[in-house]
Length: 301
Ligand SMILES: [Zn+2]
Figure 1 (cartoon, rainbow, N blue to C red):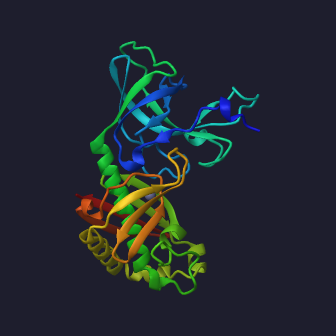
Figure 2 (cartoon, rainbow, N blue to C red):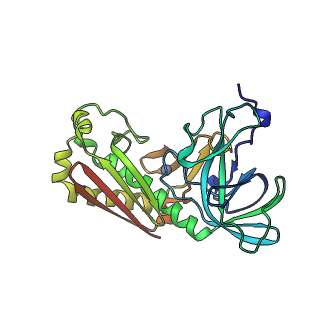
């Protein structure tokens, strides 16, 4: 049994609405092994790196306390779990040290703002103190554009590889096409105004009925088709937003986007542009190496 009353509550996150600035109350202050300050607040506009699917990098920005502006050098996912020796002994774990998946009901998931030890000797803020959090809007805009483009490219890739499945595909995407993306994805990395996605074209995909050899023959044609499809969706100017069940960090969220062929809806913990029109022009490059397809996406807003 967990005693919820003694637990650090989960962080209310403001980034799904595109918020960049907020005042918040400090809930936990700790130092890591390198002496850096770990700051947990009741709410935050900062998007942290996810610990299980680290696709979108952390926001950058600042926090003001003690009359001084401090740089937030990183924002990571933290979790406060059942204490080893009972309530009150809960430890804050971060990143890869978290032993459970996001959303585990026995754990509180929090955004941990990482700060260098203040050089000017400013004391860390006290629990309960109000601080001022501000995200670097330019960096965020680049990551949002990169992430939205990445989703559009994955849907275009699914649509344009639909005829390469000889059997009933294991899953369909939100537009009803065979879901090559979610069946084969190995790693997705969002960059400012871009992304790099790696897909495994191994035995299990071939066994599932995907003609990887035909994909290799038609690579240039497929690249043109994906670029054309994404350009058409950008020209159509579909509105996009994040739907969410609740406002805390580990609540389920979905990117939803109106496309000419229907409403796209993809589970997603990241940030996005408000319209496909904001992406300007997107260029996709496909590269094959043995057993792997790499998809590089660049956005020129
Ligand atoms: Zn996403």
